[in-house]
Image (tube, helix red, strand yellow):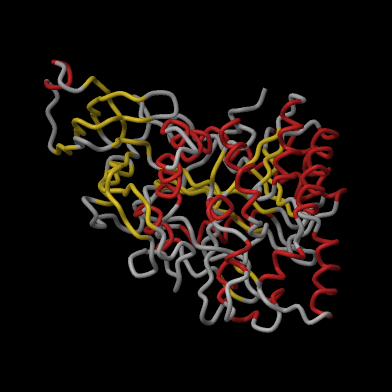
Length: 466
């Protein structure tokens, strides 16, 4: 039996803060005891980690990543190996990535393809959502089978006509199925049909720079699609999770639905909390680095997102990590913003940026852990195996130095991409040591993990449904 004791730290979960020692046995949390007590002092172990003056927090759960995603004629630049290693550096110990159904193909074929990409490559544990691109009778039957197997969430797109797009009828059918089988529909809520008209008109006017990407993907079209998704879910009697919420008006739609008692949930991402259309407008095509969908919004939208996180109208912060290199990928869209691959790198930065939000007074420490660890684990059926520090939980534990300062930069990050979306940003707080199922993955700022340590993790259904 392998045993590790973490001594002297402040253990922070979504519900508690306690100065406690943590005993780990065979990859799981075995016990907690107040530091300095006889019970804690009696523990013996092969490995002791001194966390004095540090936080001891659950490993982060990033419920929205896209490793190796094919998009816009290229692929996301992080593989499952590089992306999960970077995640570990940032204190994230579980990702849920998206397997993709190709139009005309089965869900199973897509899931098998993504399992093959990830198998033996991941430094941390992982699960899959399923992108449903082609709703038909066979697809609907497969959804039932996938839920039984632990793939319990399905993503649909109101955007990207001709690629991932589903019309309202297809969305309604999938929602009706999820109402029966317990699955959760995740929605990319933007009116893609209307956006395509605005894209065509902007390009015809010669408006080709990256900043126009944000101007055509209007906040009102995010709000309209969010409203429509909520109503379709209501008709189907199904729960709904809206991904990457970026706009004040979309938050208002979610808040209204939740006030009505509907099982409607929302996620935002660090880029919407810390970046804005000012970045999209950077000269010399630099704005292309910040092209993602939903797009970055003017700064005044940030206050509504922070408020939504405090009021629990937004429950989760994920990254939508989907990196494309500036040279050779983002520059496919020089002269035509609609050809810039959509996506930002961020899987390594999320925990640190949200700790900075604690420092800045936007969030409490417990809310930090809730939106980054516990809530995503509950939302997607992983709690309490993941997302908390409690007896029986997987020993996914981060020793976090709340006083260390760092400057985020491409020079020091571990994501396989040639720029940082947060270049030069100074933050307070840094990951020092990371354990995944009791194994050291990051040890005092050195990577000690390995590809293949991370295992596929089936999930139960959403744990928030009333």
